[in-house]
Length: 192
Image 1 (tube, helix red, strand yellow):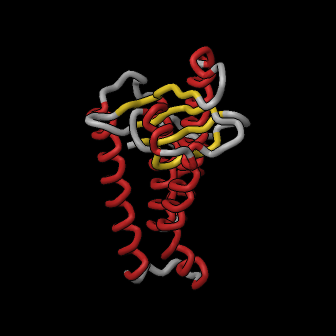
Image 2 (cartoon, one colour; image 1 turned 30 degrees about the vertical axis):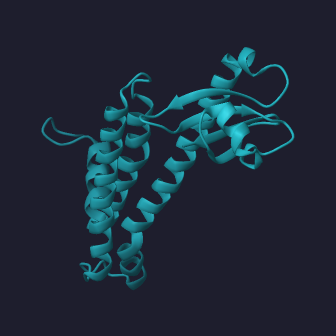
């Protein structure tokens, strides 16, 4: 029987687990949670109509946080860890924070890329009336200041980067710098 001042069994088990893992394992878990789910939640909760300056500031804060985390995790590779009793665990522990950062960076990048592609497809669908007719046709998604941006270009049979400079100027009022296929007939292109 448990007295009223002792911790419940689940709390005791959690406390034992927390004391059993090393500092580097705790750090790796924290980095994984912070740069994985926390990053994605903040990314998804950003307002869709935020100013470019706010978006740039948000990106810079996350890049700074990631840079600091990489420096700390890299430094821990070279410092001798407190002995855990297992040479293999100590060796893995040296690289675990860096591995956690790498996994979250790659995973979050893939999720963000997929979200961006879904936004582009939705934008193309909403603006299908502007893209109908004889290809190539374009609709501007974002235009920067003073120039450059992103556009959806309907060109089923040809990569728009192969267009003549005159055709590019006609479509997006600039030079097409790169294009990625969005679907069978649309491309997402950057221009400058």
